[in-house]
Image (cartoon, rainbow, N blue to C red; front, side, top):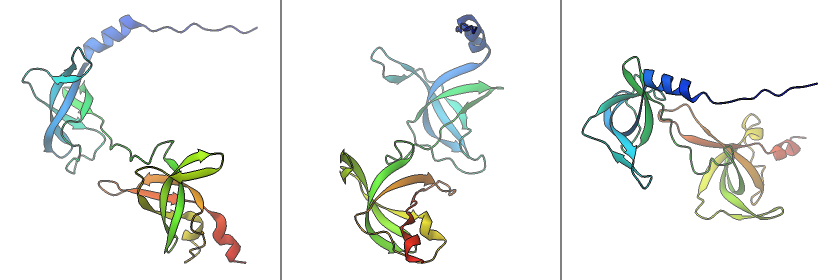
Amino acid sequence: MTTSKVFHDSLYRLQQIGQTIGVQLVRITELDEDNRYTARPIEFDAHGETQVVGEDTLVVTNLAEPADQDGVVPADCEAIALDVEGRWVVFLAPASDEQEDAGGCFPAKVIASVGNAAYTVREQAPTGAGTFANKQGAENVTAYNLAELSLGPGAAVDTAEIVLVKSMADTGSPPTTRFFFDHPAYAKYLS
């Protein structure tokens, strides 16, 4: 015999916690220094839009950026700031690239080989069962075939081939989005 536990929210406890820490909606106005920004408190108006409240400013520290480099968050970004031991903190990570939907993967057509396992590809949109067309507004990007990277120069993937491309951010500052796919076609040319 099994029993089910009943789960419930403890709104009273949340209210108590909310009173002990500060929580503030803010809009970034400018970089202060390093990973710290000047921000203004905001609130929602009757139409659900955000608006600045009062003349006060806050200095917020963005925990998503290194403390020893100038931050890159643009003005007018909005965030939830938490008062932690008298210091306002936010966590604003870079927005993902438009092509990083569906978990960072997208179907792409190989346009041309660039050499050294690199290919020019263009994002595709499914048009039916197993058929694709260029996604509207998609631009060509360079993607690397992981199956070729350690095997030397190749150009083994034919043009017009459809591959599944994964986008990833590199370790640069700020990070750059790089594109990869894993197409085993190169292996057939080795034997």
